[in-house]
Image 1 (cartoon, rainbow, N blue to C red):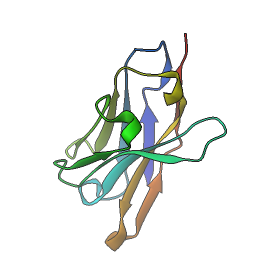
Image 2: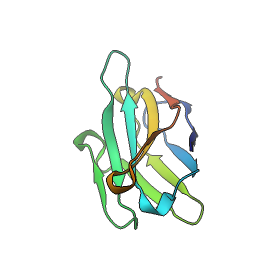
Image 3: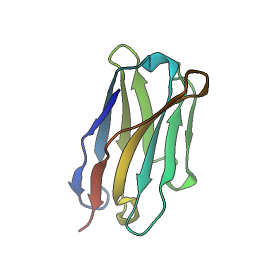
Image 4: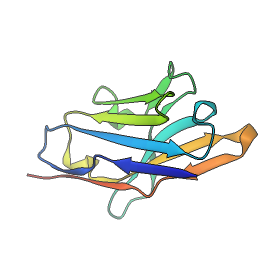
Length: 117
């Protein structure tokens, strides 16, 4: 099983980034996919989640209206479009796959996002 994140980097406040997570080794279309983040000195928090069909999403309040999660079940990939980035969005962002009935609980290695002027 692999979840490989990419797309992180450094950006100025107000900028945009798109994170990608490529999955392999499990039935991607059977998994709920999420993005988590862990900022400096903070606990890991759930940022966004998308259901298996890709037609239902949820976001933490702090990113609503700025971030968009999406998935492509053909490409076994999940994305996080991040707009209007703020310094408080600085964190390591992790991709996560879950499916309780299939005992899926998989994490990627994380990608760093730094928002600074």
